[in-house]
Length: 258
Length: 258
DNA sequence: CGTAATCTTGACCAACGTCAATGTTCGTGG
DNA sequence: CCACGAACATTGACGTTGGTCAAGATTACG
Image (cartoon, rainbow over all chains, first blue to last red; front, top):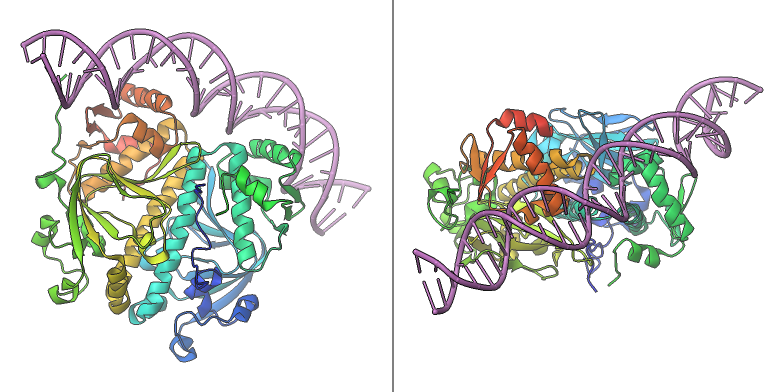
């Protein structure tokens, strides 16, 4: 059977399997992500010395903080160490579209650093600690270290796949499928970096946030949620998401396991 | 009614231009893009010798040809030299979402080459000539040439920006805005590479294709189109798109002209 | 205990999809 | 040149999905 979701496990040798393993930028961060360090993949043949010069700063911010704002020039590159964040766009009308949710190990701001002013803003969804890298220096590292550059490119391409799937979701799926889809994707991402167990995961998004991810109104998200709950496919309890049967939910969202 | 049919398969109109300046992969293609050669921008300090080894093949295909199919492994990297193509996904239901339209100078298949089997398919929209590069060799070039790698990464990030905007379109815009948005974006891209003049550009998409880009039904696209036409914002004649006042249309669509 | 934020629901309305019929364009063979 | 059929464009009628408004319930927190 065919599937239209990205194949997150596409590294059959395992070398792409851990999400953290494919983010060489997160690997630069010395202080954050102890869980990730346990996995201990040096990833890019970077020794302490070569990355020692990269200026980095860490900051802890409360939920709701804007980490970057649209239009900032030559900004830094941000990696989420702990907590959640999201990248979003605001329309003239005031409407908001959440482009991507960032979980620990995810990086944002590359576009701003390499291309000039970024179009999207990043906001902390929970209280979070963020590792900031100097954009100019990171560019230098990419220029001087081909294998690092390749790693960054791979990460970016992986990202693109997820976004492609998101386009399909927004363009061609109904409300219930969208919500189910986002939940499967999120659970899967978290599970891959050890932040979720089989049947549940943290889920700090409010209904309004969820609505702005899946392109629906808050009220209609409620309807979809009620329906999914009544079929015992998902259950949100406070800020935790329960998925009794991930396979069944995945199927409901159009995702079929290989 | 008389229609002016642009020549897709040959002539000045269909060739690469400065747009390839930001696409280092297109710059590798020796045979296509005479316009770019005229400008003589070496882009990545690549001399003939270093790229001489890259195996490349050119092919001309009629409209409707599938250039790559979902799931292909270790595929090549494809650059559109002349004509149009599009990247798309098909759902179990049979529905199709067009992820991106490829105009001369655009590249697809990087994900497949660097990450393994690609999820999206590519199909020729018009008769087209495609330049195919060997994925493995291209990976080698990226590894060995940091500045080339940086260029590819930059291109990819540029791409991501466009896709982000597409997410906003699908998630938060109404039918009329979506159609208007896509038209402004397309015209803008074409204008940037000299393939459009101020008030018109080629537009080979059928109504059904347009619908699958903007995530609407064919019939509803018609309604949006009728409304836009009645406001004298756009006019489609055969396979050419007329935009009397691009600024007004951009404003209508919330598109930021650079 | 009180206030604000969030959740949840029903009632109603607008936007969008589906079906089906008709017109139009275009290529092909006579 | 014309006849014909296939693919595409266009439109109306009608059903469904999703948005908006508003109200009450629940939770978080000082």
